[in-house]
Length: 243
Image (cartoon, rainbow, N blue to C red; front, side):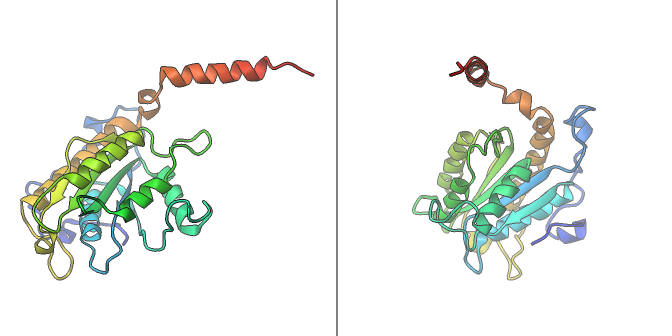
């Protein structure tokens, strides 16, 4: 699904009087990037009526309305981690999107008290580093889950741990939708509810945090230990003995 030219008419269950545009000037300094925040969305199910996908699409519309450039990855056809070379088309697509993004949204169903294997496989295919590039370091992350029964937070808690491991800035707010089969209409649109309001909250917060951090990501992720390591490698290369 493409998230282009989203208008209020595309958000039929929103209260337009309360949906406030985000002013980048409130969160970014004058010399920060001014292009639309680049947000990548991943979901964790390949079912025909996937509630994690429907929730992702609902969030994508909201993020696009807030002024983001939103891209979505379809996990169908993605091989298991280490079961294919990294030049596999789906793996290459996912890695390219991860490098393009400045923030991400992860949407998973809860299965057996955890995120789905499909969700985990996507994260596992995104490396911590590609040469000198860290595809996820310093980028923002919002986590969402859909539940088949009563509300729980197992999947979002797991994804928070992974976000930290991937060196991402995981925003404080999160979304967990209980009995997701009751929260979407036949067309796949999310119905108005407190769950829907929380989804709007999380999307709004993701955009704000992306504006806050993307212009200073390199400064925020500048680490003493890596500077020491880099200096040692440089010294070794410059002072190597000639034979």
